[in-house]
Image (cartoon, rainbow, N blue to C red; front, side):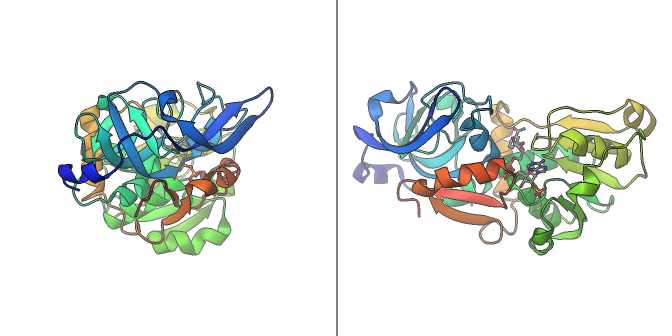
Length: 341
Ligand SMILES: NC(=O)c1ccc[n+]([C@@H]2O[C@H](COP(=O)([O-])OP(=O)(O)OC[C@H]3O[C@@H](n4cnc5c(N)ncnc54)[C@H](OP(=O)(O)O)[C@@H]3O)[C@@H](O)[C@H]2O)c1
């Protein structure tokens, strides 16, 4: 969209629709409401949100036990894409994710958002706002995980790369990105019925979550993986460290399988294994922009527009969040917010 096109588009109206989560004694009440613009937080940029997406962290943010939400009431939604209607870059299409968005600052499940200017990433050439949210926080994290592993030295041809939690958002996009780059991808999932889906994304082998989260007293097992993408954590991360090959690396980003890590020093000191942390929230701006540029080009998942992505409306978000927390999510879900097309 050209800068001038925004003139026909409404600047920030007095009120608009937003999903609002409010913490009670033992629960969190969620409701799609008319939200007053004056209740938006401080910021120099107002974005008309066209698309958002559903991430595991959104489900944590509206869960009484989630310990993610830092304000109440809160408009959740840890990512958004849309058009700047007020502030620097007016008329341009942008992405916002991470920082405090959707946890301590009203987020993407609303028709408008106001954010600090330094949270804004320009929509890269080659990606529509919908595609940016089909990737969203999860796709960004998958891209950053692959970038971290390749910086470590991983190359196609090095051997199988294991993706844990493969049917979820980070997992599906990681499978598709890696397969597109010529890696041999093995996918681990708790959903046996999604084996064909994962093979369609490019996985050549599908393992059960049972196998990749089994406890073991042995500090190391047979060397299997050139590298592991791990958005699961817990016993699955321990498994990854026990089974990654000499000199290999594990990129750890998530906690759906637990936050505790029981391991020994042996994979590190006998197999030269590296554990690489992956954080999408406070990623330095230059790296954040670079990963988005790559997601629009050489890291772009082949299945982004069809197999990976399904679309819902703002009205349908609330009903999905409990399923996501229960690990039932498959692929990525984009949310059409304010006339996203
Ligand atoms: N570090 C960061 O900056 C960052 C950024 C984005 C996401 N994350 C984290 O990455 C993880 C995945 O996020 P997402 O948005 O991709 O979530 P998602 O779409 O809801 O996917 C989560 C997947 O985790 C798998 N899983 C494995 N063990 C599980 C268990 N015990 N209970 C529930 N699910 C289990 C399931 O896949 P299978 O059935 O295929 O096993 C599930 O579909 C979350 O922990 C999230 O907080 C971190």
